Length: 208
Image (cartoon, rainbow, N blue to C red):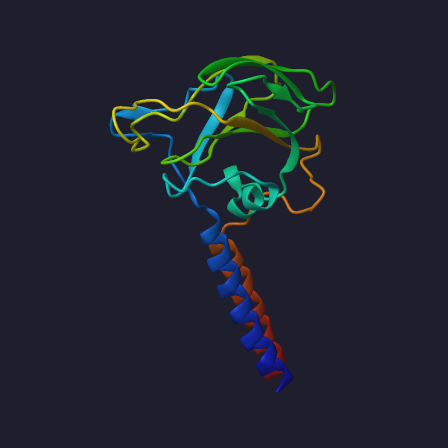
């Protein structure tokens, strides 16, 4: 009876983990028909938009790690570049920012060792969603431009570009770890195979 219950639990666990892994990849491409915002941050190696495009989510650490931007689920919060349309405030310890709601610059000031991963998450308002850029290492200086254009976003009226509300810096430690542990999100298929392997071992044990 124990082996039978263990086998059922193993299959259930594998299926749940596979579904959870698939659900975490809730992002869409920064390139498509008639648009390419993948290069709006110089020095970046990847770009992702939180799905759906008009979700109007506000970034927070729980959402960022649940989404697993760029396959990473243990991001740490560094700080924000905020109030860009009035008097900008920069609470980032890793970067100095200059500029405004449409364009600006960033410079790495975090010292060494550098974090293993860094991304900049851009936020706006209605009819848009979070846009994240993974920076290339080693980090230096670069420029940014608002990614909130039409397309890919469907902006109301005659608007073709929305201002940036704020830019949030997320990172991982130099060894690729975070306070929550974890790291790269395992592929759902891999997790399912692990579950099936455990099930096979259980069956062999039952037969012996």
